[in-house]
Image (cartoon, rainbow, N blue to C red):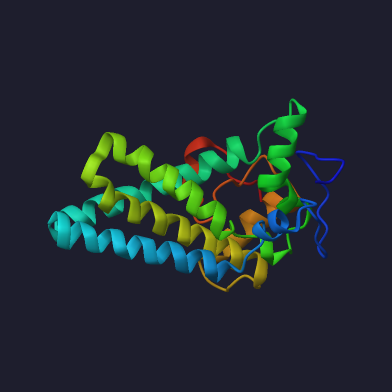
Length: 208
């Protein structure tokens, strides 16, 4: 891990850095976005199949739970980005966690291999989240979690597209603008990547 880890870093628009000396751990921090998203979409499809064919939920039940899961992700995206990925590095442990989870992305925003969470991390966190949702929701989690996962997939795809491609000439351009401001002007604003909705609600929309 780099000797110096910081909550706010100067972006380098080329290159990358090594997080771990262990080559296996280092490899696990990188992935092509399509691998992670393909795995999560497959899991979501299986859970939806189970909801319909094994549990017997109706189309209305599945659609409602799925929508609730998707909307819940948009809030989770905002809260995680603002309070976990940008946590104050008040000690060495928090400093290292923050840099590993997100600080490295701010330092090397063009490193496409670290724009999306790698499969190992996604599967581990996804498993923990399913258990968390299962405890209060029981079988309803089978239709709720796919919406949550597809919410993440939308976020991850948009995040990759914003860093890999030029902004489109349509209503989606605002996502590129907001995220650019977050990276290069003011990282205390613009925490929503796939939608500016929660930035609007909580008053953290980037100042154009």
